[in-house]
Length: 432
Image (tube, rainbow, N blue to C red; front, side):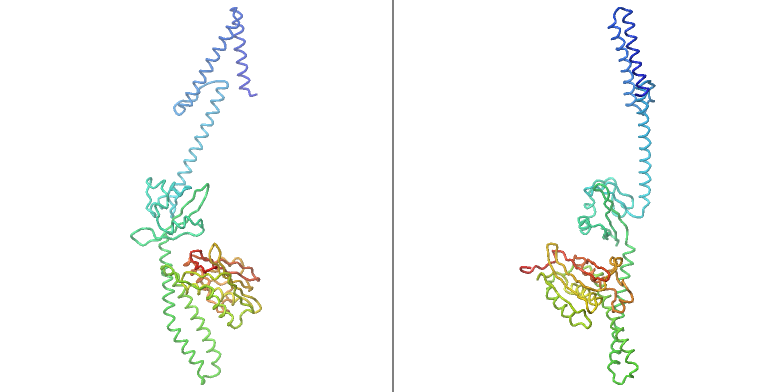
């Protein structure tokens, strides 16, 4: 028991004793005790009134000077109040610092609630997206940004990569938007102006496309003269080797330019993919025959057709994607190895896999395989005649068809490349 409560009990005992003494002296012991307790109760009610009045008006009044238990209660309440005030001021200070720091950010920041409603945004977000405070606070973000691709992005639940959109504006601009979930259903929407980067990327693509077009004509002339020299019976035998090497390098340059033009076309075109029916089983049977006719191919090149269904899309782009995957498998699989092609269909869509028993790919290289000109082993790839553009072409061709490329590989044990197509791209065959 604390000293405060000991003193309170002693005071109560003293009041009782005083009532007994005064009552006995007056010849009315019971009345004396009742009067003493009544006075004690009035004193306690006074203390309770002072405490209640101070709690109600504590911003205007000083804590009441009360002794005993009541004084201890007042002191504890006062400490709690001061501590609350300190934390409240500290929180307000942190919030002001947060607002100042987010206002200074070059990117827009929007805090969204569980229903994608706007809870708060900084000045940069207001500038980039045309938001107004407080009118737009509480509104759903998809009611203010009505771009169809943004709506699909919100519903996809895949926010690993940012989305680039054209906001409704008179001048040409591009915004990068990325959703970052946090807390209990809340999320941050980060907005960045990427107009400059987009223009640089467009210039790069235009340069590559134009340079490739310009190089094709002189290279065709050079190849023609080299072919003529190779067929000239009067050519000095000492030149046979150099001419043969120059023809091989010219063919390689032609292949690189063709890949560059194809990749540039896939990147630049904004047209929707045509809904041409593509007979995938027949296409794969032809690609298998071409692979079997290749010199130095692996001993086994097999095709498994688990479905006769086809695809809707651009036949040329689908064939280009499949051809590049098969070429890669044939290049990097030894003669004693195997290459298997599998076409299957399920509830999630169509899937084309190329499975080889080749040299495999180290895990650290897999995320960058679809970058243009990226090679796992530069010397080995050049020796095989690769341009470093094949998988980039595959990625862009699949993206235009709503698909994606999945890669599994173990170094020294082979690789599996799988093209996944969504169900809406399937051309269902009877019983397929």
